[in-house]
Image (cartoon, rainbow, N blue to C red; front, side, top):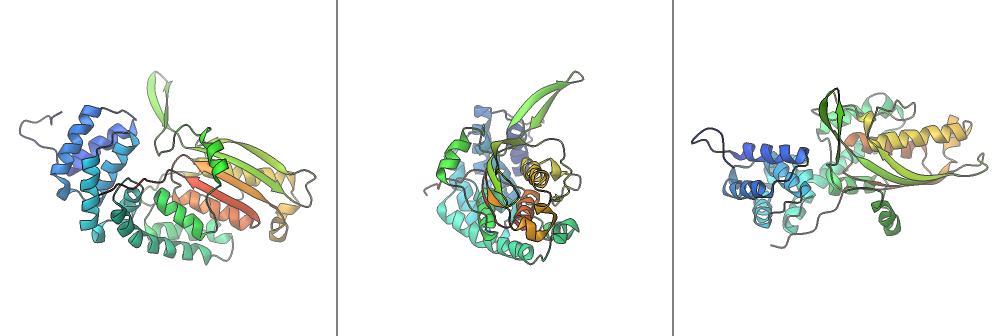
Length: 323
């Protein structure tokens, strides 16, 4: 591979952008990525935090692991730990890097998550979400996704824990791939399109004094047309003012659960005291890390139905890379 202009060399941003573009379209060219990885190692000191995160994420998504580059990235993380932005840090924390690198990033990211959760837990009512309070928090913190590791820590602070192993084994048979990128191709008006997919598999049960039989079910939920919900509200992620997170698989799932409960027990859902008598569980496996809007959706569902036990696993946990 080579640049188009004679004598022109790719800089760090070019390398990161190139591998990101291939990952977005799920196209793996191993000789090309081997060359990019070798070039990245030579220029690793030029990589800013976003370059490091993009490159590590894209190569992992495509299964093109280059261990020497992962060692170089691990070292660079430790050298630049005080200057790494939080959102790239969340992405890097999900990658296969040195345990020391993970520990250094967690020591910076987790206190930010503590502050983020404290703002959520201070909310006194659902108006915090419906009236734009959560939107202001998201914009103030400037992080659109805390990643799989950061997200798991965040959920634990909200009282939402990891599902049991038996569920995860069942769920893994329904989710085609754990990772941020899955896609379907389709043709419309003679043009080829690529639709990115996020899949959530869930099992649920809801009970209340007014229900003769519990509501039970299981199945997959995908991102799609926006779900207009009376019960929960999505938010725009930072730096993406036109993103509609009402289309996310997790949001669509939780909104549909709210509607199903309300249809089955309209009296019970009409007041906070009635909703507090609705019990049960939701267990979910999401193919990728939840965005901050979907974190808010789970928090709202928990506020609406405080006795329903929520457990979520979103994305995959990284394996350590031994130095």
